[in-house]
Image 1 (cartoon, rainbow, N blue to C red):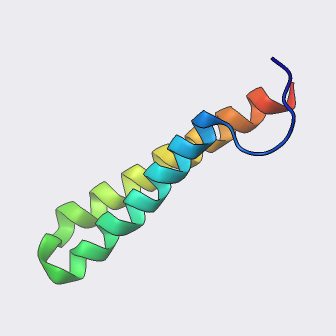
Image 2 (cartoon, rainbow, N blue to C red):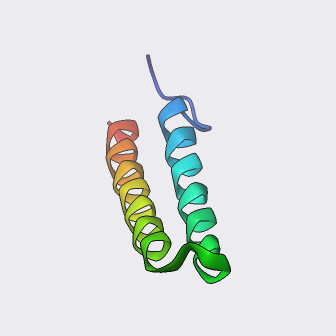
Length: 60
């Protein structure tokens, strides 16, 4: 199937994980502590990796 612009299902999932990472980071000052900080950073990193892979797939 040819890419015709807009978002794909995969990039939607990557965006969800990206926003979830920031949500997890936001819980750190409320009481999540260091574990929330580390988990949030990891989730954001994974989502950025997903965006990179998806973008490479869409450009072909």
